[in-house]
Image 1 (cartoon, protein in one colour):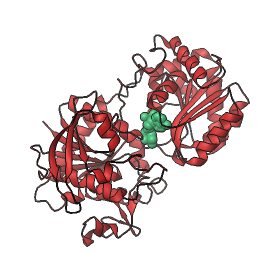
Image 2 (cartoon, rainbow, N blue to C red):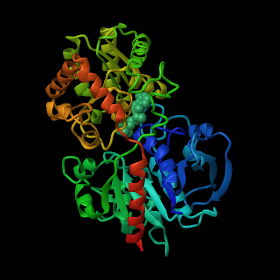
Image 3 (cartoon, rainbow, N blue to C red):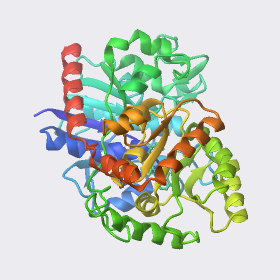
Image 4 (cartoon, protein in one colour):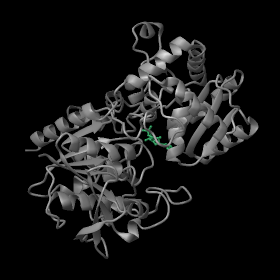
Length: 485
Ligand code: ADP
C-alpha cells in the first residue's frame, strides 16, 4: 500500500481560505479510496485545533531553531477516514487571525519561520526522525508554504520520493536574503539554480527545483505557466523541468457540493427536478433584499476580491447589466478598494445589486443554489472550483478562456449546442467589452428556456468527482518513485 504524506497549509473543514483548502480537504480521502494510506500534515493553527475536536499527542519534535518542542497532534479529518496531524507550536500558530494574514489583512511578519517550521516537521516525519512509527513512500507538498520540504531532506542518505503541486504560481513566498541563514539553510543554496529569485529567498523554488515530480491543477495552466505571460518569472525554470511537470484537473467533493442533498440550501434538487431550483432563487433574493422576481436573471459571484479574479471587469459590466432586468449578488473578501466599491454599488442599487463582504461557506452554497448564472472572469485561473460547483448546481458559468476554466467549461457556440456539449459561456480577451459581449450572449440564451435548461442540465450531468484525478496522482507518485530510485 502506497504511503503518502500530504503536506498543506490549509484543508477544509479544519481551515480554509480558498481552493487549496478544498483540494487538501478532499484529495487525501479520494487517494485512500483508491488504496493509498494518507497522512495529512497541517500547521496547528488555533482555529484548526479548535475545529479538530479530540486530539492525541503522538510525537514531540525538536528543531534547532526553536526554544520548545513541536507537538504532533493526531485527529481524524472530519467526515473522512483520513488521519490528520497538526503541528502544534504555540508561538507560531496559536493566535487570532488567518493562516497567512493578521487581523488587519497584512501577511504575518514571521511567515517565513512559520512555514519553514511546517516543512521541517514534514521532513522529520519523512526521514523517520519525528518519533512516529510511520514513514511515507512519497511526500506530496503543496504551494510555497511547503516549498522547503524537499530542501530539508536534501542531505539524507535515504529519503522518500517527493512531489510538489502548484495551486497558484502567483504566490511564491519571497523573503529577504538574510532569512536563509535565519532558517539555518546553507549559503550554497543562494544561487538562481536553487532558492535565490532576483535577490530574494523563494520558498516555492524549493519545491520547483528539488522535488522529483511537479504538477499543477489543470492541463492548460501547466502549459500557461511555461510562458512569460503567466510564468511569474518562473517560466524558464518550469520549461527546464517540463518533462517532470504534469497538469491534473482538480476534482470536487461531490458529497459536500451536491444540490440533491445539500443541507445548507432551501430546497434540494437535481436535473430531474430542476424547477425546484427556483425556490432557492427566491430565498436568495429575499435574503439579499433583491426584488423577488423569478424571471429576472440572477448572476452570482463568490470570490476572493483580488485582481486575479477579474473583479474590476465584473464591476465595469454592472452599468450594462443594470440596463436590463438582471440582478447581481456578490460574496467576497479581499482588497479594500473592491470591497468598498461593491458595497457602494449595492447601496446605490437596492433590489438589483447585493454585496456581502466576508467569508461564509454556507452563503456560498446558497448563492450556487439560487443564482441562474455564475461569473468568473479571471485573468488567470490555475483550476478554479467555483465554476465546477456552479456546473453541478445548474448555475451556468460565464468564464474567461484561461487555465482550468478553459478545461472545464464548454462554450455555448451554435455548434456546441447542436452537438449537445455546451455547458456555459466562455470568452476571450480581458476587456470589459469582451465580458459585456459574453453577458449579452448569456442573457439572450436565458430568454430561450429550452436552450437554457439544456445548458443547465448538461452542466449538472458532468462528472468532476475526484475518481479520475486521484488515479492520475497515484500515477504521478509512481513516476516520482521511479525517477528517485
Ligand atoms: P482560489 O483558490 O483562487 O480562491 P477557487 O475557485 O479554486 O479559487 O476556490 C475558491 C474556494 O473558496 C471555493 O470553494 C469558494 O467557494 C471559496 N470562497 C472564496 N471566497 C469565498 C467567500 N467569500 N465565502 C465563502 N467561500 C469562498
